[in-house]
Image 1 (tube, rainbow, N blue to C red):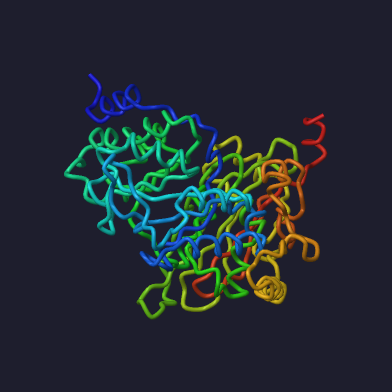
Image 2: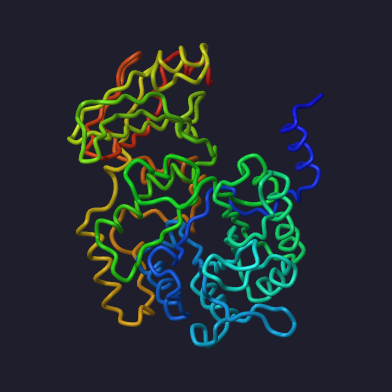
Length: 432
């Protein structure tokens, strides 16, 4: 007899709508207004931010979704349809979507699988078909679907799955490809069933911008939440780092795993001190038998720290035979953060965009200088297949067989390295 949790998962697999809409094959990238603006949203805000996404070159790096979060509606009309707030969106949602599309971007919207949204506005529970069709008619490309006021329809995997599956079916029935992003805060183990009905599924509550939560080491959505109108040069340089984005958009879709975690006596103001090693497999940019490898050193100490990891540490999950093979060759070490644009170049981009006034000049940061990757012209998958140097970071050193990878990591900082296999005569003969 199957354990009860396996029986539940088997039932979910039978009842679910398979997600095969061609969306989010790699993590979605974009911008959402909630963190910076909350309910203070408007047509003007979205349009201005969309133009900044283009002007700053973020669109060409893959940030394509402009997502309108909560507080946009003004209840329902006599037919049960959600009505946009006419003061915030005087031209209606279809006009907003059209404006996003005219800039080469996509438009996202928010609702909740409950009677109300988290902000107390009308939710979509019981109105899934009506709302999905209206969103499709407006030209919506993305739905962030929250979990507030769910009328108690939670508590088991099956109950939560079924509640969210109603919207999955409604979206599919419209015939329009709409990326479906579940936001149920990790309740009822969505990692077991979310992939059967949605393109992405949240596995925790709200996160904060803290040094030990670098989502780029995992295939997680990269959704900006900052106010781009006042972005700092350093921040623009960070979010524009094409070599780091390429890890997030890696076609293998593998997550890095923690290999070790040591507490230290170099404690900070929170009474903590620790160092961690994470590693994982990436797409092979050398065209051989060896995957590229992501190495992440996380320094939770109170001071800068030189961190070391042996190749055996890094390859520990490959199995005995592969570990021996991987540790027996040399590896090129490339610093993924070392290749980001300078703060001076980032400031020049900001200044040039601000100088356009209404931001409609057609200025685009990808036209400034060299060294800017354009993912709309060549996907990250193709760029990695071509071993495009813009996606590989800066070469720093070579690690010999059975050697040690070393990095100097700032206080509360992260070092991200890409290891590329250096073929030996034996491996080259084998590949031939």
